[in-house]
Amino acid sequence: MKNKNFYIENYGCQMNISDSDIITSILLNNGFFLSKNLEKSDIILLNACSIREKAEFTLKKRLEQLKFLKKKKRIWIGIIGCFSKTIKNFFIHQKIVDFFVKPDSYREIPNFIYSSMEGKQYFSTVKNNETYADISLINSNKQNHNKITTFLSITRGCNNMCTFCIVPFTRGRERSRDPYSIIKECKRLYQNGYKEITLLGQNVDSYVWEEKNEENKPKKPKNIVEFSKLLDLIAQEVPFMRIRFSTSNPHDMSNEVLKVISKHENICKHIHLPVQSGSNKILKLMNRKYTREKYLLLVKQIKDIIPECSISHDIISGFCNENEEDHQDTINLMNEIKYNYGYMFSYSPRPGTYAYRKLKDNVPEHIKKNRLREIIDLQRNHSFYRMQEHLGKIEEVLIEGVSKKNNQYWYGRNTQNLVVVFPKESLNIGDISYVKIIDTTSATLIGKPYK
Ligand code: SAH
Ligand code: F3S
Image 1 (cartoon, rainbow, N blue to C red):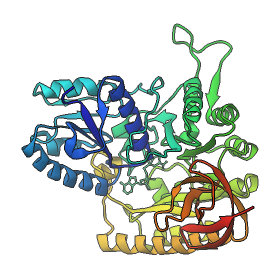
Image 2: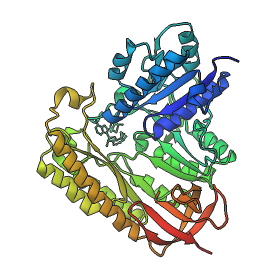
Image 3: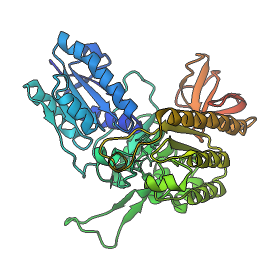
Image 4: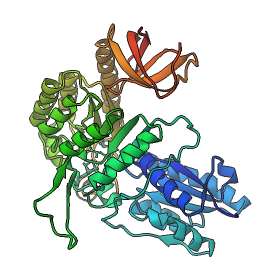
């Protein structure tokens, strides 16, 4: 069969990886073949991310390279997923991209490919009802044969409208996937050898699904499943699967969820809780709907209910109107919490967002960068401090592969999502090992097998 090899590349977050697995499943079911080799592929799909300027920049650079490949041979290139209008407008008149597919139109990719082979350029529009509930994920990463961890989207889109964020515009309104299809998929993944699933959503705590009758009206008696119930059900239905989830929005996280996490051994003890800023003034400008005080209270509740829980963050430095005092509020908040780890960014205005339209990007670039550097350095100290707490402990580690730095060591993660490396004495990828922690860096726990 000709012209049916596709190659897929990711430019973004975990959600993109999960989306690439959905797309792979759709294309394989339509007679296409997943290729490992870009040079030998007919169709190249770039799964875009527009959340920050940097990812868009990398995508543009990649397309410049592909332009040369396209001159050498006939290939079809699609930009798919979370791409902004800016990207679309930039490429629409150049003869590099053949089709643009938004996150709710992946089922149409085979048609887009066929149409573009007839010389038409295509783009889909935003829809708001797709959850891909019937799609069985297929690993899109051919490089990694030992896949034992995977991502599964339980909600799509976001209703929060944080003023800096492009996601509600690229991924549309929030909707939750049918819980029974989620459980079925978790069981199938377990049968296929997966040992860990991360449930994904921009805001997993706002997951809510209501059973409807034939007329699409709420069933009586009502059957409503919220996130705490969903977690509880999954933990029971796949008791030997490790379960993680991301992202928790501080505004929506409930005590019920915390209780379910503490109740089940197979739910990992880690919460990714983006704070973005420690200043109430900035949180308000960001439309984050919680205050510093509420956030600190939530962290206390987490530690009270799940004492061993690790907490990670996202922080943006240099958002509009951020002054030194606001920055110090972030520093103080970090000092108070001492996060296990975090993802830190300097603010980049995203066209179309409220902040882009209505607020001034008035923190000079060098100040943004200096503040970011200070935040990153502080986080490194806190990570090291938190890692020390594990010294001497026996931890349960899921082996994910061989350590990149030393092939005599296994690489895995403990329940807190911290990386652990330890000498390979026996066991295999996918096994759980008990490891005694004997040393640490700020990013890695070093252990030895515990017998
Ligand atoms: N749903 C998640 C965030 C998704 S975007 C939540 O609830 O917070 C991932 C992270 O990218 C955000 O947490 C934020 O820290 C960062 N981010 C988003 N837009 C950004 C922008 N315009 N500039 C810099 N960082 C940004
Ligand atoms: Fe973005 Fe805020 Fe939603 S950061 S993804 S609008 S929770």
